[in-house]
Image (cartoon, rainbow, N blue to C red; front, side):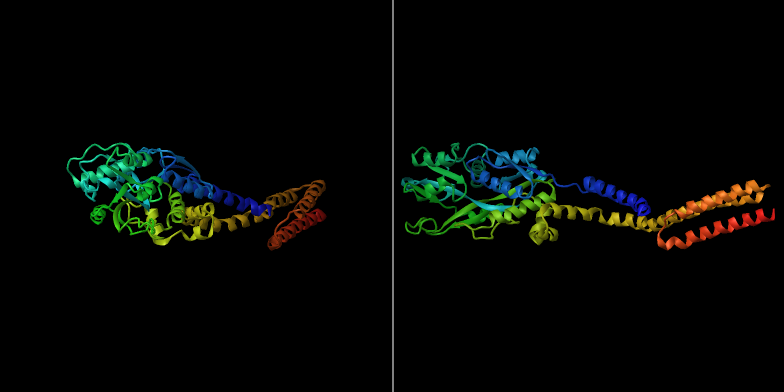
Length: 426
């Protein structure tokens, strides 16, 4: 056992060192911390980011949710490397973002709600393009609503009045108080201020008849229909189908984010976003096609094949370890073949060396015995041979090598007999 450990022990240590070096530098483990740019603490993005944090914490990943002013700040943080992942309103990516960031797919639809006061319908059209001459509460600077409002105004062209920088509940309150003639929001249908305006008698929802055309111009935009009575059947809200344009919120990531983290984010996204609503049916999202950032390679693989084979049966940590192990498996096998082939000869050499090393002493004793000139010297040689026999008798070798050990002992007896005969003849 000791000899086997001396031979195969260094081999195991070499393999372990190779494994550590490869796993650390060639296929490094994913970081277990993530910075998630969300939105305001009272907004939908922040609430969803907290759900992602809870999902990833079950895999031992610590998620820091960053409070921001919305999509535009989220883009800035991602581009500056100060965030790793963010929820981003669709349709707002610029060239810098397309070069630095990637998308994990569209996660949910955010309708662009357009409300006016009901008592002003005689003055206003029922389409966004006819709001050029009115004051619009179009979101604060840096918000997704503001960016979408400015983008749609540019699509329609013409000269528009200055946007009033009010968002959310403040914009809804201003509309109902008559301080603005229109208010727009990029928000969930469940947002409290959207629900208030949908059911308020002095507010009227305006559709967008060019929604399909806009969606064909940008993959991050999609047409949605708010069907007749879907909000309130009893009061018939809305009183007829309303065509809306929606921005598809996507999960944007730094393009260098570890693939294993992208995969676990996609797993969380499936459980968070695949439910239905009064606007979209279940299993509509996540959607690989509705993005204005390049889809990451890991996302392409995930949407095509789902979780990896190992991830289906192992925890995140073990699956990630085994998947990274494939990186060094082939070179490791190539290195192990000669090492393993070399180990048995080395082992045999070490065992036989324990036997053959005594032949040097035996040859020396034989020479001294033949050269001896008196009986006293010969008796000393015979005593040394006897001591050699005792030493060899304590040598331990595997059973398969006993024949070689007994050959040595028979050779010692042979030399002893030669010296004893010479002494008798002397």
